[in-house]
Image (cartoon, rainbow, N blue to C red; front, side, top):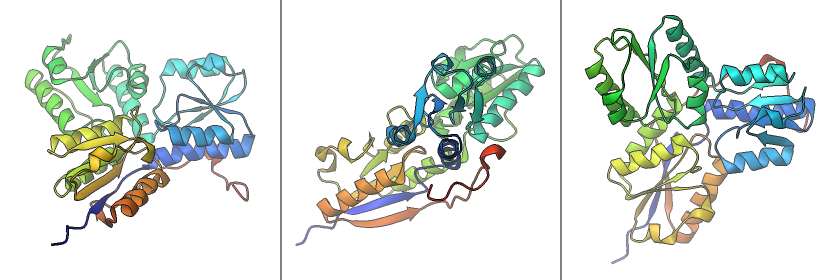
Length: 318
């Protein structure tokens, strides 16, 4: 009796989100318009392939603005920066191009509004993540970072009737919901954002992974170990009871993961390029003689405008 054919289930949506596409295009257009070097504070997005490609085009990635010559063009990464960093850029006369994701900017603006109302802000997220550091910088005296349910059960506030929460945009939906419920139990007057902070792409990719988990016996997530949303996809798959692994590219694939697997789900974090995903899919399809089926869960059509100074058509051949 012939063995059943291996099937690759390719999640849709996957990979680049609108904020990542915008951030990358800002760096590309800045290089077109101003020439190399263009400096970028922090990795524009958390993916080595993206960073290396932009480096080859003339981008220079730095962690501190002190590494940038005065007056140079500087791009702030998609993760956002604190007001202190913006002020430092002004002090060095840097020409700033802001690639902060608009959905991260939304969270920053909420933090400012809550602080003006003298409310305690409970910021749900990973305290060492660059996005959280930027949001925290908007209202440091009013904000406490809450990472876990345990933190939620122990956090202390000055006035329980004036407490609001915000979240990092790339968290696990399920984990965040548990933390929020714990906070609401302790602070019945807890104020939530007018619209959920976890971004549409994070939500959609986690929903797609749950759909994969209903069919697959292995889920491979293409993304960087430094990418919060990619790591959350692995966690969501595993919490659904399916073996899952994070790999940056085909080079990270371990043959042992494939043993005995008939339905292999593949997705990608919001900063993972499609060509890297396709390299993995094509390899598996060839080596395993597998069929490929795209599992379309949600159609995405979100776009974000570029800064006006970069919005004119790009140079021919770019």
